[in-house]
Length: 109
Image (cartoon, rainbow, N blue to C red; front, top):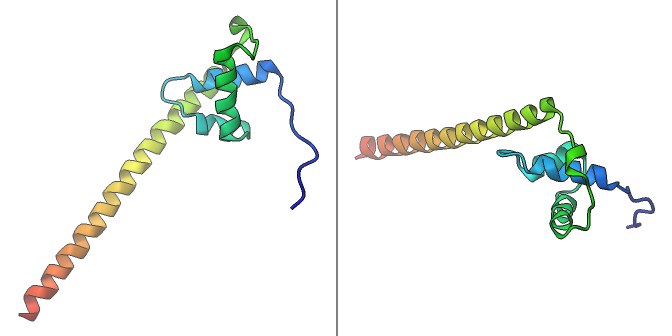
């Protein structure tokens, strides 16, 4: 398999903005990475570099669009609700299977 010959280069402002998006309560880094079309590991590396001071960014100049922030929160809420519904659905399926097995055992005796 051939290696990539072109790699994306991101400036410090982009990195700092991506890191600040991950600091929003209720927003997961994996969702930010997907939204920015970058690998999740890269985002975690940038977070580490920000802590070490390797990425120089002026915190005052970083502006997060309120729409993006609210959309990420909404996405997280919907994913939690979806996961809960999937768990409930799986439990109901198991309960139905169990009750059908019990009926089958009791009627054959």
